[in-house]
Amino acid sequence: MSAVRRVSVFGATGSIGENTVDLIARAPEAYNVVALTGGRNVARLAEQAKVLNADLAVTAFEECYADLAAHLEGSGIEVAAGQAAIADAADRPTDWAMSAIVGAAGLVPGLRTLRHGGILALANKESLVTAGPYLLAEAKRHGATILPVDSEHSAVFQALVGEDSAAVERVIITASGGAFRDWPLERLSEATLAEACSHPNWDMGQRITIDSASLFNKAMELIETKEFFGFTSDQIETVIHPESLIHALVGFRDGALMAHLGPHDMRHAIGYALHWPERGHVPVDRLDLAAIGSLNFRTADPERYPALTLARYVMETGGLSGAAFNAAKEAALDAFIGGKIGFLDMARLVETVLERLAGDNSLKCDKLTLDRVLDMDHVARKIAQTIVDGDRLRQSGAS
Ligand code: NDP
Ligand code: MG
Image (cartoon, rainbow, N blue to C red):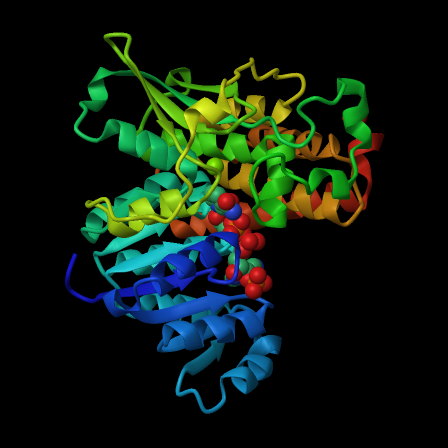
């Protein structure tokens, strides 16, 4: 790829963002960095903007504006703040953009970049979970390409290159099993925040690390697989693979199973999306299979991981259930981080919110629109919040 590419990174100061910036910084002559966005870590955002000579740096929080401006004074780099400023940054034309803001806040900036008809490298899981059909329709409408960055979906994408998707029988998404995979079931209710924040294999942001312990992260990935590739819930399986070296497998009707292996380094999937359709050099460790010796697999027990059962419900229900699921999951995670609910209460809370909305017939929706998704996000968060505030999760006997 010879022409200089215009790129933006949304969520540049996060775990995925840092890895993306690292790859771009290795070949500065190849990129014109249009915008970098971050949240509260403005010192790091300013540093990245200077190293990459970005046109614009945006913090999501208006109260952080002065601090960011002070860090960038005299650099010639434009500064802005607030969610609207992030969406405006997404309106600046790019050939390639990374969507790596955490949470539902990543949806709108990702959607806005699609209008340029370029490539959206999608790490933000919430975009597909909450608004998959709408996101894909928008990409089609604008002639844009979405490339998955989550390692499992990048693996499936790579295994499908040159294949007829009609010949796919099943897709197997692997799961590490998270921090508590070897804990006795009865101990799980006592799991603390600190314990949930340590991942056995991957170094990631706090929220996704906790989601990995509860397998809500895997639940999101199953829903993403359905939305992005169009497979049915029946075709999508998951298996616990403690080494996390096989990211996903695709099984074809002739019985062949294609596995994608790679080290625990997100630059692998980010690099694939950055260089696609070519394969560029990516500075990740090469796997030494003889040193690894063996790979293990075990069944994902639904009793231990109720989030997986909820994912099946969402895949089969469709409509606004993904938006409700994600919002309730984010609220549950906030409540767990805030010490208001226990580890196992997170799944109970999400289930209670989904049940309530299904009871009102509110999850049905023939045609997703951004407004409907954002409304449902708001409603589901509010229900979850009310339950947490009133401690009704326990009182209702749901626990
Ligand atoms: P991090 O928490 O490490 O980073 C999140 C980024 O978003 C940071 O730049 C943060 O800024 C910014 N941010 C936080 N809150 C807001 C907000 N309200 N509005 C705008 N920006 C905000 O997350 P990860 O990098 O781990 O994950 C990012 C996304 O990618 C998530 O959706 C995650 O599920 C997905 N993902 C992550 C993987 C990983 O390996 N980490 C793998 C696959 C997918 P600041 O830090 O400055 O406050
Ligand atoms: Mg993943």
